[in-house]
Image 1 (cartoon, helix red, strand yellow):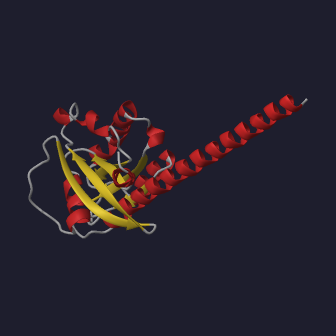
Image 2 (spheres, rainbow, N blue to C red):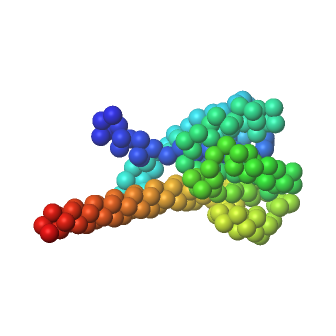
Length: 208
């Protein structure tokens, strides 16, 4: 593979958004990618795909976002799309108690399909523009805090929190990649150092 292709791969970030049906996952992605709100659209069947270029840390990254269907009957389709995921957005609606209670089930599914320590997660409570919300922001924040992940109130209608949430997720992924590279370089340096020391030991033995 050419160095150019390797660079494209390094600068590509795969994201998934999961959650129950009708919590606004597709609308959140539409707002982020196209900066518009689509009130009426067909429910996602299986998965849908969008992409957007984003500039972080003096580099351009291509976010590849997979919008998964929330309907229970499509859950058996979803697992194959976890492969290679860098980050996952777990979405519920602040006016839907059931969608919030199902977050734990989505977490179980994520853990059963991917090594959780290899991905970055965020939790978003969508439709925060609704006046009579059922799930408070504090409750969402506490749930996310217990999981040691970031929480964001979002509104696909107004755009509130959408860019901030997904950008934060992308930044976390890029930072994690950087830490892996640093760790790998340190390991290589240690290995090189040990090899050199071994060579010196061999040289000394030869000299005696």
